[in-house]
Length: 213
Length: 115
Image 1 (cartoon, rainbow over the protein chains, first blue to last red):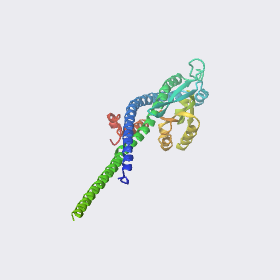
Image 2 (cartoon, chains in turn purple, green; image 1 turned 45 degrees about the vertical axis):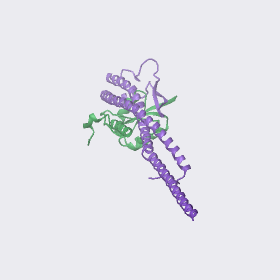
Image 3 (cartoon, rainbow over the protein chains, first blue to last red; image 1 turned 90 degrees about the vertical axis):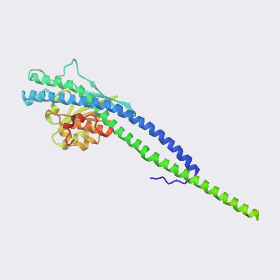
Image 4 (cartoon, helix red, strand yellow; image 1 turned 90 degrees about the horizontal axis):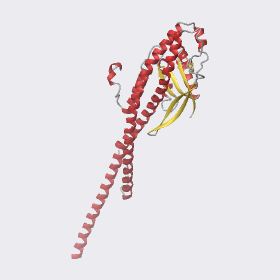
């Protein structure tokens, strides 16, 4: 538990400086941790909401899609969807939340012409397919938001854990160890001082006795 | 800002629906295929990978490897049979990791087995 130090004044000054720095670092880290957790709680709440919505809407959209394909021959369906008109590209940026780098994800819509999202003529396909695809494209934007928020939450969780470890290491190990060492040195120095005084007193007595003789 | 791609890994029925929207799709039928698809997508500039919970539950290790990276963002989605709750479980575990206790899901205690 204790640090081995030589009980000198140099060592003492050094240690005192280190404790001061460690205490300051601890305070800063603690503040960082509090702020991170505050942000994290908001985000994770949003994450949960989004996920609930996405899961619900996506399941129903996919079920519609299954219904739609049940009404159509397999080959025609696959042929209809073979060459999608829309293509989804993402623009990804970086954002810095309390020194955690997180991505920002935005879709860069490249739908050609007007808002036609159907890659097929309407002759051979069922109406349900149109509906299913429309709902699905509505869910997609939410899914993208979810992907951004969820990733951010994951990254922040990792960072919070790291920060917490550092805070704990400083608070429960580093600072107590150094305070302990400081105490040890101070006591040792005082002890030396005292033994010095007694020695001087003894010598004084001896000198006085000799002087009388 | 550079361009990134968006992909879906899942069973054939699920990915076909996304294909209609212009996403790149990777239909897989076994965990091995899923893992391979995931790894190759991660190399190829995919920012967001949607993966069905059914597949994801079998290749958890491979997915967790990307947990600390900024990209790709791997998001679990339900397939047409409804959510399995793995995605929710992941949120819950990141809350536990960060805060130490689960503060949001207590009201749904009955959903969590063994609690």
